[in-house]
Length: 432
Ligand code: SDX
Image (cartoon, rainbow, N blue to C red; front, side, top):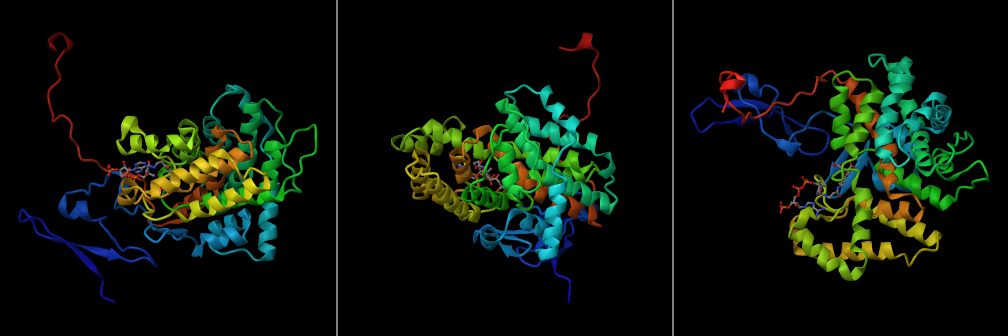
C-alpha cells in the first residue's frame, strides 16, 4: 500500500516537507515528525502534550468522545463485572486473559512475594507519624531498589518479571503498613490464604488482638475499584514512569517517580481533594454558591473529580464506581449518607450548567471513589495511596513495554527559548 504522507508548507516560501502518517489499530492516526528538526531546523511546540503521541502502546485504549476504555481490547465494564484484580493484572501485563492454570500460577507467585524485607519495616520509623501517606510511599517504594538488588538488571527479561511481581505483590503490604504507621498500630504480616484484596483489607483493618473477617461485598467493591484504576494509557504518572524508565533507571525508582507524579491534585490526588471539597461545601444548600465560585474561577476554586484531558464524555469508570458506591452504602446501611447525597446533587447541578456543558466537564474516576473509602473508615489522606497500589500494575506493564520497544530512546523534549541572548560577564563591582 502507498505510504500516506502529510505535507507541511510554510508561508515564508521555505520548501514544503512530507511526513509519514502512521495508523494504529484503532484511534486517530499520528503524523511521524521525528525527522522534522533534521528537515527544517524547527521543533513542534506542544506544552501539556495536547496533540503528541509519545510512544506506541498496545495496552490500553481510550475513546474520550464515546467514553470507552479498553484494557488489551476488553471493555472495562466487562472486566470490572467478571474478573478479579489479579486476572486483570495478568491481562494488562501479558496481553491475554489467563487460563485456569496460568491464573493459579500467577496468583501463587504474587502471593508468595507479598512480604517485605524485615528491615524495610524499620524504614517507617524515620518518618513522622503524621507524614502524608504519599510521602511515605514515594520513599519506601524507592527504597525497594536498596533491598532487591538482584532484580534491577533492566536488560534481563527474567529480572524485569521478578521486579514486576515484587512490586505488584508488595504494594498492598507497603500501603497497609503506611496506614498502620499513621495509626500507631502494629504492622500486620500478609496472610497467604487470603485473596489479594482480602489480604490488603486484612493488613489494613486487622489487628493481632482479634480475628478480622473480610466482608465479601466490601472486598468485591475494593477489588473492582482496583480494576478500574489499574491502567489508563499515557496519563501524567505513567508518562513520568516512562520518562524515568527511558534513562535506564531501575523499576523501583521509576514506580516511585510515578507515585510522586500521581500525588498532585490535578491527577490522582483529586480523590482526596474531592472529599475536602465536599467537606468544605458542607450542605446541599451551599452548592450554588460553590458552583458560582468555580465558574468565576474565584481563588482557583475547581470542581474536583470533574474534567479530563481525554474524556469529553462520562468517564466509564465514574459510572461503575458510582454503582459500587451505592452497593457499599447499602451493605453498610448508610443509604442516607449525607456525603453521597451532596455528591449526587453537585453532579446533577454541574451536569445541567452551561459552564460545564460547554467545556464537556463530566465526573471522572476520582469523583465517587473517595465516598466508598470514607464509608469504609479509610482516612482521606490514604485515598491516593490506594490509587497508586492499583496503578502499579499499569505502570509496570508500560515500563516493560518501554524497555522492550526497539524505538525506545531517552525522553528529551526541546524548548522554545525566551530568555536572554548572549551577553558578556560584568564583574560584581561594576554591576548596577
Ligand atoms: C486523573 O489523564 C488521565 O488519564 C488521568 C486519570 C488516570 O486514570 O490516570 O484519569 C486520573 O487524573 C483524573 C483527573 C483528576 N483531576 C481532577 O479531578 C481535578 C479537576 N480537573 C481539572 O484539573 C482538569 O479537568 C484536568 C487536569 C483533569 C484536565 O485538564 P485539561 O485537559 O488541561 O483541561 P483544562 O484545564 O485546559 O480545562 C479546560 C477548561 C478551562 O476553562 P477555560 O480556561 O476554557 O475557561 O475547563 C475548565 C478550565 O478552567 N475546567 C474546569 C475543571 N476542569 C477543567 N473548571 C472547573 N472545574 C474543573 N474540574
